[in-house]
Image (tube, rainbow over all chains, first blue to last red):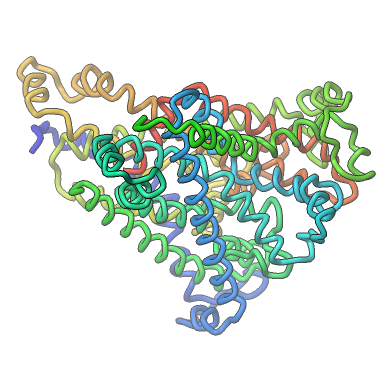
Length: 291
Length: 282
């Protein structure tokens, strides 16, 4: 127990700024979203009518909503999986080399600082069907690349852009995890005659599993909520619905489609998803302390 | 090194170099693209070597107008971005350190309730409650203003948690000693807590600066006046013009300028950046 100060009004004064901002810009709008989710507004926003759970039941019977859930899951797991695999490969290699480690690290971590929207635009240009160097190269290989028409290709593009930005983050955490593994364990395995490959799968990788799990959760949260900019600056959810992830759909239905009831119902569902993910993240951190 | 395996080491270097090239490739193409005239893109593939128009494009983008429907120069948007990033970073640090101080070093009724209220902001990213938040800011007539850009993003559970963790490690004896020496709460905060959390503040600042600079959706929604555009969101306005008229060279130059400050911060303050990254995830 820490020693404390006895003053009474002071702590409230200290808390006041944060509580005010939280109440005005977080709790109040969140409350509005919850309330709005039970109302149906007419197209001009003149009147609204209480409709109970209708917005939700509408959503749950909407094939487009399920399509968006599917898109989000595919997108998130693709980003998490590819990002983690590539970052692990790079981190293991960087952990091995003696010379130039700092230079490699520096040259690999900077994409973290690039805004998702900018990452999207950069890769958009690389893959532009008529002028992008990669698209032209693919064409010479016999693959007809056009993400304006082909939904799978548009999805590939946003996955690449989102992964590119996230690899640096995963890399840093894997490198730290690898450097925390006691050398003696690896030496013992080496003396027993295990090859580097075998050592990795039987000693290193299992010891890294807390880091991997942690990164999986963080990457999923990232792909769910922080990739809005990538989608918006490039595909805008298209072609068709092929890259319309849930976060984008909330914005699209609310601001572009002006269907506030449905958008708010989606917000409420998303808030629940964030809640669950936050709890998972915190539960896991408690376990890490024991480990 | 556990054993000598020169081929494996060589292989490692190759993989790392390949990784670096793959990561840097889009920047290379963007740099090259910004040095060619806009017409070059209509004829075919983006050339892979520098052209001679770089100086003209960069000067135009930086000082006259970014182009593609954005009428203000990049330097102005850079200032907007800087104001927003600094306001968010410093604002978050200021209100979080105060509230963490209150929660750790004082006992008062409803203390845990306050803590949970702050905790809830973790669960509510802007993207999730976008429409009602926009409404609140519009009602407060904060659209197109610096306050509107920064204030709604200032509350942060992460920073409060970080400071709380850091304060909890401060031994009670220190507080007792300070009190016996006659230090009040303010004196203790100023002369003991702030100096002790200096590296934490710096690490957090690096992370929050990047966070603030890279804000996208929020500025996109609440700024309609070019003079309040931030650099990152202006890209969206620039790529939204009709397909045939896009001047990719100025977009690429703007993109590079938009990512430059946070990238420099990460590279230049690598130690603090890594510390901040690890700390904020706890």
